[in-house]
Length: 269
Picture: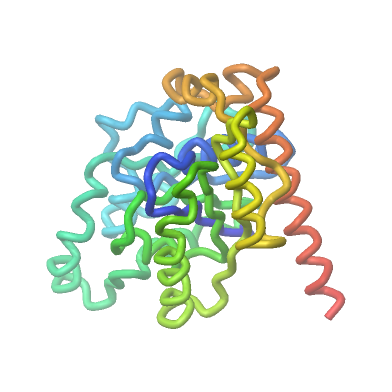
């Protein structure tokens, strides 16, 4: 059964979509079957794996509002072991349409629709990664309700912890209201410029705050990581020898090892 992980941070520009795409791709390269769910109306994860989003009619939105069956909105990508549920701007209308959808269907769940969609798909995958929008609305609530855990990308900059307390409060609220088993999978440090003392200070502060939840792998600030999505490719397919490729492979190994360890601990109890 697939582990469902949301990548969340309401602050934009922290490398969330870059991490969603490249972690998903790297898990696939390491032999895991992966479903990447683009849950951001901007659709950047969709274009980042080479899918033209504009004319799509089979997207996550259609599945959420029961216009399409979950399996109808899954697309194969060109990349090893990686499938996609795409998104485009239609997803932005989800919150506005909720009252009408609830009138039409009494079973329609404002915060539980994504969970319904993924329940029908997760058996086919080792990992389901959800690329969330940089906001704290009903889309995030849906993602947290559907997920087993969250990965929080945090940029190595001065205001790195700004807004994190609000995000943690949202996670606690989701545990209380819709998903008591939701865990923090890990915190990944992104966009590190190791030439600056500030970047290294931020790493120390984040590790002090989140302790063992912070992954050992740190994603460096690299132009090539920004270039790859514009070519519709994960970094490993755009430049296999890049330091970014190795960083995301290392991160994927940490995610796999952490989950294998948890499974072992659970089976021993």
